[in-house]
Amino acid sequence: MQKTNRHKISEEELLKVIQKKRECNSKAQAIVESLLERNIDKNYFLMHLKDINQSHYDDVVDERHILLLCGYPLCRNILENIPSKKYQISTAINKVYDITDRKKYCSSRCFKASEYIKSQILVSPLWLRQNEVIPQFKLLEEII
Image: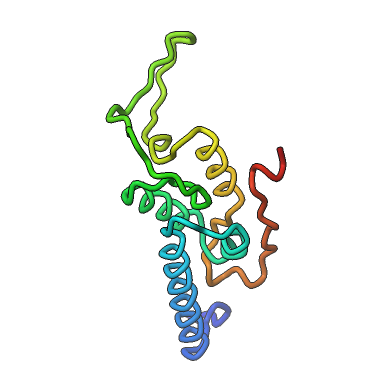
């Protein structure tokens, strides 16, 4: 049997890819940590979204919640009176809502703004983005 060499990459190329992956992940981790602060500059926030993926953004929201900060990085509010329940029942429309994610925010406005940002963030691996079109990130309040 004859082996095909079509997908063979050199050891040097493989090492470059591994190094690029490490650098990208390290940069993303630093950005995640910086977004745990209470006062985040809007321009800094928008400029660095290209260097994280949706999973990193979820980490930011979760970590801010643990720190009792609103999950939306541009909000400075401290979370108070966090409901202990997992579900909200609407008797008006007879529907049950899972509020697990909503509890991570100080308001519905921040929840919607955060979800809007997350929807714009790329899901592709960070180290494979050099040929992708990076979106111009917009805040929810900029389009309303």
